[in-house]
Amino acid sequence: MSTLAVISLPAILHNALLVKRRAGLPLYAVVKDDGYGHGAAETAHTLSSHADAFCVATVGEGAALRAAGIAGEILVFCPILSREETLRARAYRLTVTADPASFSYLEEGMRAHIAVNTGMNRYGVRFERAESFARALQTRGVEVTGVYTHLYDAERKETSMVQIARFHAASRSVLRVFPHAVRHLGGTGALPYCGECDALRAGISLYGYAPSAEISGLRRAMKVYAPVAGRRIQLGRGAGYGECPLGNVNTLAYGYGDGFFRVEGARDLCMDAHIIKGSRRAGSYAVILCDAEEYAARHGTSVYEVLVRAGRGAAERRYIWTNPT
Image (cartoon, rainbow, N blue to C red; front, top):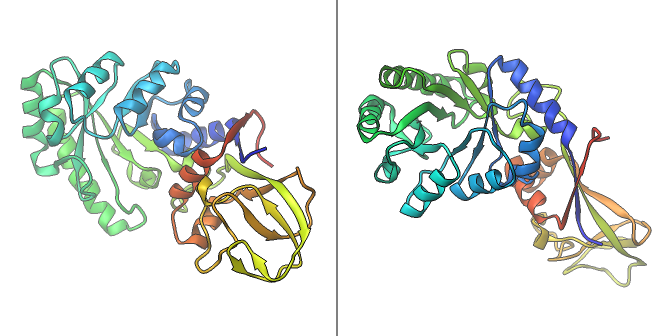
């Protein structure tokens, strides 16, 4: 027996349709990093009739989606940085990100979306240089089919409005060169600002978590379980590598080797075992994660990190076609 992530595909579908309806725009579904730990291919197949494109981090992720049978547009966020990646992107019909760092690897006939740096400072051409960059791509024979940016803190309206103004100025200049380029904004927290855009990119909300109060009614898609590997009356005061008088204890067969976090100062979570208070039956399963938001707050991290680590760390994923209870 091993850790088990149970993932509700109807919950993911419900969330995608909810976000798409609220935005009133086509949906670019973000399935990077193995679908935030939920499974990129499984998520993409679930949304194949409803998402207008899928977004991944790397050429390798995009190639894996194609190999899994995903036929729609796949946008790669990270700029390609080698001739090998150029060849793979072309072979798998991927749409790449046009960024100054990748310019020399973009070839005639490739499809690209221009990333615009409006203040996040991760990727992209500076917003003031978007038009000249677009013309350089046109001269190179690159087919620009989209232009996008990302809000670095969507809950801060003041800074977001500055980014939005920069993006609209940049996208208008790109449209002068490539009139049919799709303007899209992300992530999910950008929902209140996407009125003048042609699509919305959504990531975390697909899996049941809202980065702002703008979206309600989402369904959490993943629960993680660990097997109870032992039940005993505590001998002495030890609990893992520390002391904690508990009385009746259970050993759960999971630990930080599976991507979970220790509470600061506590030593009851080991690499492959967790000592907890209780009296559960050996061989049964215990829920160890059902609310990544609460878990993240308790451990001083983000929902994104919790989901990716927990989903990837689970030894087995089980997909269900019912809504989570």
